[in-house]
Amino acid sequence: MDETDKHKLENLRQQLPIGLRYGLNLLEKAGGNVEEAAGYFRQECRDLIVQKTGISEQEASVHLLKYNFDIAATLKYIDEARFSLTELIIRRNKDKEEALEKIAGAVVEKEGLIREYWLHPDALSRLQPEVFCLVMLMEWLGFAGWEDFETALYFHLDVISDLIDRQLLLPEIAETLKEAQAIAIVQAPQQKVSLERDGFVGQTAELTAQSDLFEIQRPLLIDTLYQFVKSNISKFPF
Image (cartoon, rainbow, N blue to C red; front, side, top):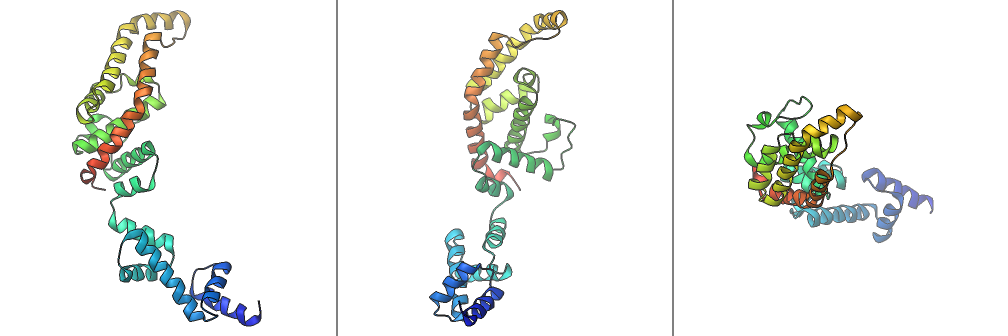
């Protein structure tokens, strides 16, 4: 590369956020004309923004100028202007459970909900029913993951099973949890004796079977809750 080409490349890169190779390609396409090369770059950026967002070229130009033709920053701004936080989380997270966790976390933060370890249903009473459903179910799943399945059977299971049955229309999963709770309650006295005698207590075969059944049903629960949120996206104000 001779000194003239180096000067042109430096001039172009001072104007635009581009790398060496891309700058050389633009100059070659423009026959060495710096202004034409810059024009090609700006048009390519506009085309990309229009393709990804569906906005007009004029709008794309305005946003690109605002962010000095930084594509990532421009797309981020356009998305945040067009979509709610809930919609953005869904668009940006392919893992459904991770998306649900982030949406529930956003609700807790935006509503200023105060935690004392785990949220009580009463603390969520001002939420719309669909939002309450998401936050409460994710709270229960989080509790079950932190503690264990048997302990979670005593964590507001009446509320949880009702949400699964009536809101998500999954009576089979609700019944699995209620049957597991019934088994745990019946076995509790014997489990207490075992704990006092042996210093530890294991999960019984009957309860293990219910726990295993729930794990089989869990993906359906997550998928249904995810679709439930998407179907009621207008109820999520963030």
